[in-house]
Length: 175
Length: 127
Image: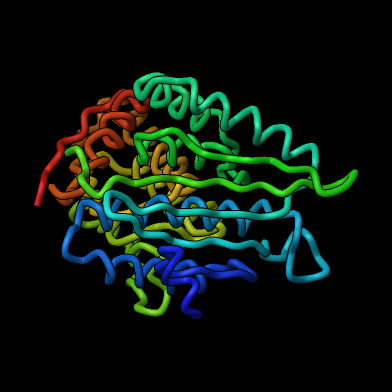
């Protein structure tokens, strides 16, 4: 970690394959870091796992040669500010998925809390058993954060886009 | 019918512990649930419950003690609740309790959503 990372409020950052061991390691660290505020700790932890699993399942960049068994590659980081924490997750997506993500995030930001809950219930019921839960995770993140999702889908070339999502979690949680 | 017991493993905290007691009818899921292949883990649990509710007529007390579950797991929790509802519709006796940390700001909404989706009552018990 360099001097610059402190100046940029970074608590931790990671770039690489996001598998279950990585999730567990950073999840434990979040719990430890925020142990003095259990409500905040739980919220940051839940959002982190959903965002990181999205990278693991849906990144277009995978570690192995087998795209069906590989674990997604991407980046995530936790930043701290006086009033909030911010979780950022970034990964490569196929261009067609990028368009869908853009629509999903836009829809999530337009809906009220209760409308989002209803959407989550409908989408969850539609999930087939082999599905890993795509996009319901994003809806869940929107519900947990109680704030708008900041996101960007930037075209890299004709086949791929770069997806970035940023979630603010206020330190003063409304119970 | 044999009970179904899966103990929590420290190195794999993403699997919940399972204790489905065929003698007492008390079934418990505890810990966290965010494994990579949720269906593979939950499939034998669903099979056990389907068999138990088909073959027997005992009261089932289902205690959820999950502190975290990801989206994929939540779909399979809903499948468990659906089995409970179907058993109740066949005049089976059920009691579903959800134990949660009172400092978890979101769990009450989660459980309320499960109640709406499954159509069964869940008792919220804070600790």
